[in-house]
Image (cartoon, rainbow, N blue to C red; front, side, top):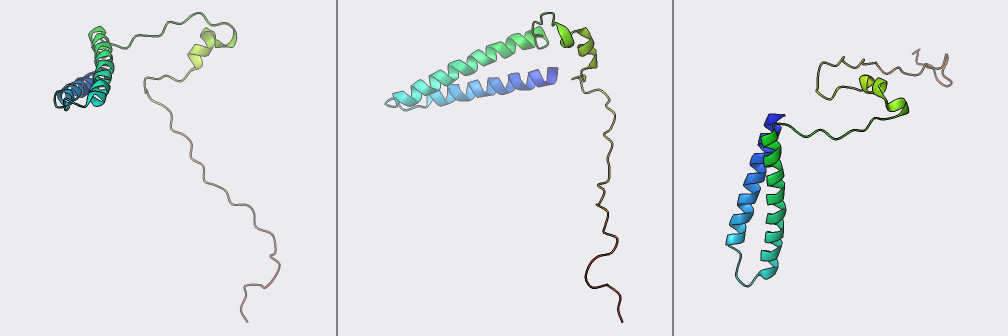
Amino acid sequence: MARTIDLELTRAEVEVRELEARLRVVPMNDSQLSEALRTALAAKQERLDKLRALHAAGAKPLPVRTQPDGPEGDAALSRKIPTHGGHRTPLKRTVPQRPKAASKPAGKSKTRK
């Protein structure tokens, strides 16, 4: 998990630096491109700040869960498949079965004379 966060953080930093570099070389008269790059840079920096906070926390925040009622209670939680990628039993592979052939085909027989 930490590797994933590190990789995302690194990519976000690179994207921000690329946008900053691109913004520095925009022609003076191209205000539309400059404004679009500033907007994209602000969004990327916001994402980078969130990733840095996540990285500082050391893990992804867990979603807040309320107590579910009925069939989605504690018993249902114990039956769910684990998301951690632990050992899973392999799937059984079956050989596809061909349909049974007719007892005697109509038409010519395959015997030679």
